[in-house]
Image (cartoon, rainbow, N blue to C red; front, side, top):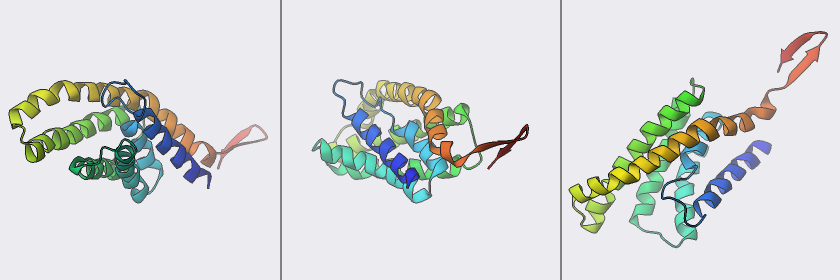
Amino acid sequence: MKKNLKFIVIFLSAIFIRLIPFRAPNLEPIMASIMPIGKSYSKIFSFSFGFLSIVLFDVITLKIGVWTLITAIIYGLLGLGASYYFKNRNGWRSYAKYAFWGTIFYDALTGLTIGPLFFGQSFMVSLVGQIPFTLIHLLGNVSFAIILSPVIERWLVKESVRVIKVENRVLVS
């Protein structure tokens, strides 16, 4: 029950932060949250976190479009990928690497396809416009991955590890 409550708190926090007005575009904690979720929860929870983060935000802001489905599926896949990637990996470096490559994957698939395929934008215009956008996205995601992801992970596993002292010995259960 507590684990589900923590999932909901992290999910709603990520949505709330995205709703803050006048913040830089793509400076948000979804990637930083999805990685420890992928490590601590099932694959369906990880996919759902990414997918529903995008869908709910677009519903709340009344900006639903074809991009909603595409970006939601890709963020869902990043959540699913996190489940596999973090199975045997730990530490801020692993979070930073996944955030870097996950951001490149996400921005390449969304930023270089949606404009040309659905809005008649040329590929070159999309590419040139995507570069500064991706740099900001990378800066935010990697920074949050280094700082926020380990904190979220510790909070998620905090109650599953208990230290018991018995006559000068430490037992971990």
